Image (cartoon, rainbow, N blue to C red; front, side, top):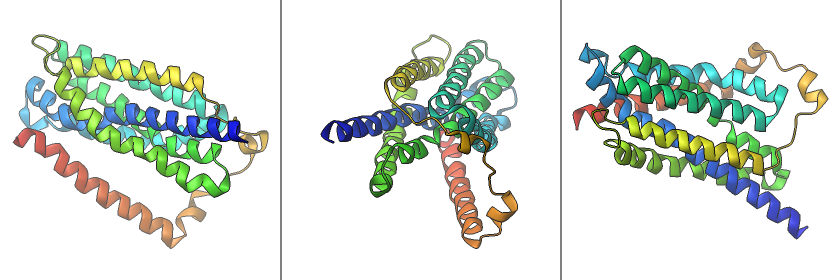
Length: 240
């Protein structure tokens, strides 16, 4: 029993680390992308467009990422998301070096897709936890999201001048390193594979889901909260 509890705590801790590293990509992008955009865009009014692509990628990836994990399992789903994120970070580095605004915007879109996958780490915690510890497990993993808020701006600052004449290109190199660590961690933890019933069973239709007032309130609240946050955090770096 003690060994089982130890493995559970280890898994939750490692999932929290994964979320901290993966989530730091988003907080770093919020800190740096508008500054990069302002520096390399011909039309300075488009400076915040890359961050818009990030939010778009997050929005579009959430449901497909969940459906993918239903088929292949959490571990391989997270690895796919991590691969997309590392590719986006590599593309962003190249785009900054060559001052290609369009390519940079597309690379940030890939990082937005990564963010859609990252939102699901909390559900991986729920999968491995017993019913009585499920809420605590989710909370512990979400602590990684708080750490991400500190890690992201830190690597943005530390990597800003790492590559000469390419501000913040080095920051995305840190992102690549983090995602290599995430893949290593995912190989170290056991996450349950979806059962045949889960893979082939019918899901509730979206009309049934959105017919519930609680769901509508939750979605609207999230939209407003996320929108206000994005508005403030997008403009702040440019105003400083």
